[in-house]
Image (cartoon, rainbow, N blue to C red; front, side, top):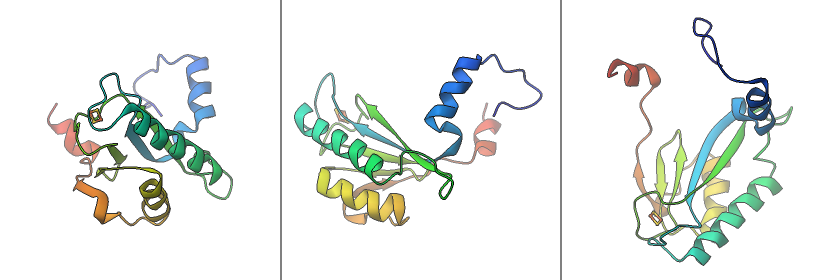
Amino acid sequence: MPSSDSPSLASDSLLACSKALGLPHIQRHVFLCADQTLPKCCSKEKSLVAWNYLKQRLKQLGLDTPTADRPSCVFRTKANCLRVCQQGPILVVYPDGVWYHSVNPEILERIIGEHLVGNQIVQEYAFLVHPLPPLEDSTEAI
Ligand code: FES
């Protein structure tokens, strides 16, 4: 929500879209390098297999939509390139800041079950863990 001391210029349509997507309930945001303009970390086909699996499994497990029982959700974004460009597909989970390599459906199943649901990093495929700093620390530098 925008702060109360700064008027929001967001339209009703934008706010409705935000609500429909469950944006206020995002617990984690997953970015996957897929459908690249210049496929470097893996083939475009391999990245799309991973992307389609991620979408399908989050939906099947009901993780992509907040519910009364579980008011948080996992948001997913297809990134054209995450700039790592090797050992892909590359995936990053925020706010945890966990970067994974070689993400295929089998490994995605582990990331979904162990990390997104079980809160345990899949160490074998994580190559960096760097959570983003809290907002207070970030604004001091501005
Ligand atoms: S092409 Fe996948 S990270 Fe750059």
